[in-house]
Image 1 (cartoon, rainbow, N blue to C red):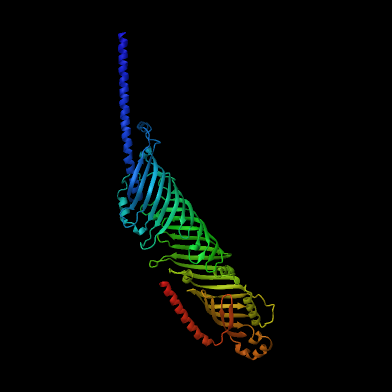
Image 2 (cartoon, rainbow, N blue to C red):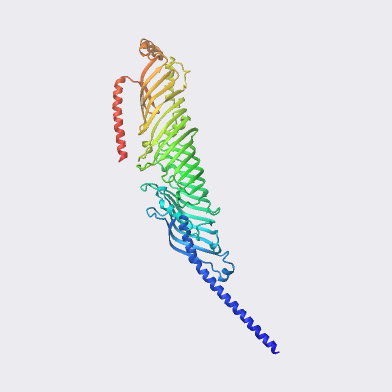
Length: 565
């Protein structure tokens, strides 16, 4: 009996000891787990700063950062080794300045960001960051020559610097950015930066240190319209942010061209692009079903296939080349839209080739009302729009040549005059079967200050040819041409009745340069109602022409002075 009591007493002592040891162990574990949990807060803060500083080579300022630790027991954190336990990070007022560069805007400014991280992953070689959301982000991309060369040198001095942080092997699973703005800073700080406002951006990870897939939506400022794009972005180039790769496809819809002076229409464009933030190659198509010049108001369908290079640091655009269709007319355009250092606005310099255009398409676009003429048009011209203020029509400069074949006037009164000219030139003034004749026309032209100067213009119909030079005032719709009319028939053969016999003795005086009749003529009036007549007193007209030239020079000088003011 006594031995049994002693055994029970020892058993109680053993059990009590075991419980005491277990209690002490649990207490120690709780204390250790609790201390580790509290240490995670400053560790996460430190790692966030290290990652942002090293990844973007920037000095980072964060106004406020809150670490939302999960509400789980310390024992659970200990026994699960924190696996599957997520902590949330919230920060406000983030500013990231390129190291040593206080003379340019911060490369990143964020109103706020949030992300989740698995506590166990904090100490893994590859760290996973989940559900990053950023609001109110501004990105300022500096040009290359504004980068401090000492940065890359400093970066190479200690490649293992802060390697215990989040510098390498970071996988960000998804980033959602709202209300962001990207600004490409120009090389010259006096110039206006190129800005893009983005509504929403969604980035998805494809692995560490590789490009991220993205979807983006933004509003283009001018012309206003919605752009949707998707593709790949990155990896981020910390040494040269402008060299960060970007590629993708885009759709630009409902862009109102009416915001520009002189033109109107709603544009739709789609295509693909690749390059870097500072230099993009863009290839695509653009369609304007109702393109028009405001001066004429006649809508014509415009469609283009283009390949352009865009310099993001200054907005210069190189066309190489653009193939367009206006109505049924195909043309090719190459050239550039460039802003010179001394200019406040961009200048446009283009070469346009139209080998076989429909004249009605061009006239419908350029002039009010219905086209007054049809035919095929071969056109080669340089187009220059200098960086001046005022209307586009006042700035437009053309220099080129044209050829019209199978031309025919659609206004009956004009065509009647052409038919009558052809009959008389062939010596058959009463032959009504000579009808609806076609003409050939060609020459050189220059447009400046809304006045087209024509040189060596040739105009031919069956039986005659006309050589003209002169001008057409687009603003006032005034024709002023002088030249010669050469007819196959003799002057008497152009008439009937008594006029035929009266002019018979004069045939030798008008027969010159190997033709039956040579006359000095002039063309006046308007484009729709031209007036053809003999140019009597040619020498006097020359004096008048000199006076007119002086008046035009004065008018041009006055307009230029007004634009300058």
